[in-house]
Image 1 (tube, rainbow over the protein chains, first blue to last red):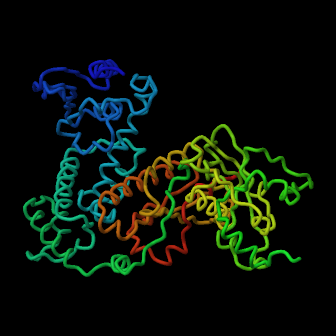
Image 2 (image 1 turned 90 degrees about the vertical axis):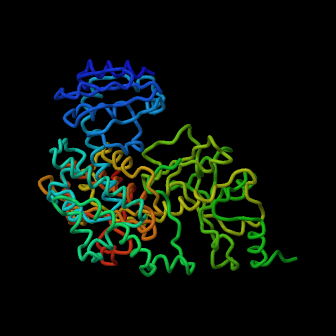
Image 3 (image 1 turned 180 degrees about the horizontal axis):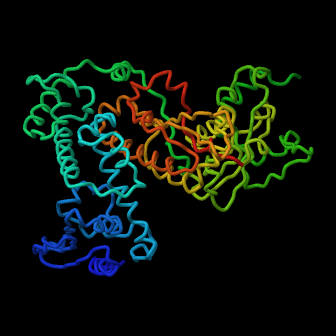
Amino acid sequence: MKSFTEIGNELARQSILPKICSCQHNPIERDSPHWGAIVVNDQGEFFIYTNFTATKTKTAIPYLEIPKSTLTYDFFERPFVATEHHLSPRSSSPSSHEVTASDVRSTPSAASQLRVDRLARIQGTLGVSTHDFAAFLYTSRAGLYKWLDASKNIDLQETKRSRLNKIESLVKAWKECSNAPLKPVLREPLATGKTIYELLTAQNIDDDAVINAFKELAEKLQAKPKSWAQRMAEAGFTRRPVERLMPDEE
Amino acid sequence: MTGPSTDQICAQIDSLGWKAGSVLPQNMLSSIQSFLRNPDNTSPQIDSNDWLIIISQTCDVVQRKLDREPFVEILHCQPQKQLRPDFQWRSTREVDFMPNQETHEEVYLTAHAIKNRYSIPRELLASHSPDPIRTLEGRKVIRLQKWYALRYTRPAWPDAFNNRISNNSKKKLEVALGDLSGNDVEVRIAIANKDRELGDAENYSIAIFFVVDQLAWEKRPDIREKASIAFNTFKTVLKDCNGILLNEELSELINGENFTWQQTKTTDEWNFANLSVD
């Protein structure tokens, strides 16, 4: 397995990351138009610093084999903390960490997949239609279909990225309020007379108003009558267990 | 002197523990050999390591009236060195599988649905106990039965449609489904012109539905998120297939509560075995 520094140097050599640093948590040259840096701090934690223009940094992240499940960070704006285990090879292949030309070619789709995963995760949490989700993101439905297509390499504009970050952070707040999807109460009138749909589709989202609305709606959801499936399950009517979706389980 | 009554024979079969997934013991081979016939009337070669597995439903195996179920069906499975990926429940003709991962960790079997299936008189079971060592684990019994059911009930998608989904795409679709549980999510597909073999100039229009169990939808954001990611990846792969046109607007990740009877009738459950052409 290559060391983190070796990988970083290799990425720099391949121009995936324009700048590589290994330092003790020092600030990096943030003024550079395209920069990305891998930094190790004195606790041995690794950081990937980047600004959003460094598309190549996004391509570097999947290369580094950081498990997708850890990708809860905002890789557009904030540092990501990777610990040593993130760099462990997922396959036993000794060449899994070697940079090859084909790796570099194939990484854009991996980066696109990360984008799709991120968007899909948010939409899944909310349980809303593509039409409504597009309205939250201040884009068209057709535009969102493109964003949700991992075969397309797309660099989001700054305003779109900010909007996405905003929605993502609010979705986290919703998850803290409720496990339920937001969809059933999307157009439910709030005490203020507005709906959460209106609040989330406003050009300038009022965070406090949204958070208060989430709390109100979570309570409303709890007070709703039990669903048909819940009543059936409680009465002992359950579904037959079924096989996994995948054909091979051997 | 009269032999046991047919009722006694059936009771004996039940008490010996015969059921779906039981394996015929080696010492039973001579008594059933004459019932095992190839199409050319020769006898199949049965080796000592082969598994003769009962695939009839247990309730039929132990049916109390002999004349109601005079025969039981068995599947002749032969060991092989490894599983062939394309035949792990992906073909409706041949199957490779592990019969029991707990007791026979390194045994891989193969069989052909029809060539290796035989019927033997049920009463023969009354004279023997099932193989005490070898038996199919429960989920494999269900899997085999479903595999047979699919052979007869699967929707026949046009070859021209199946051919447009390359092996590489199939693999990607499988990866997209990842570890989603069939208990939480059902994948369904609507195919326009599903009864026609279209020429290269025409596209198959499709819509994809990931139907999420209502309770999971209401209570499990993690399942909604996984399903949403899988849904979008699945769509991307299909959109990439030449000659397939995905209708994005109709495709949906949907709460099971809202998936209607009408939608059920207009769609087929996704199954990789449906894609087999050869």
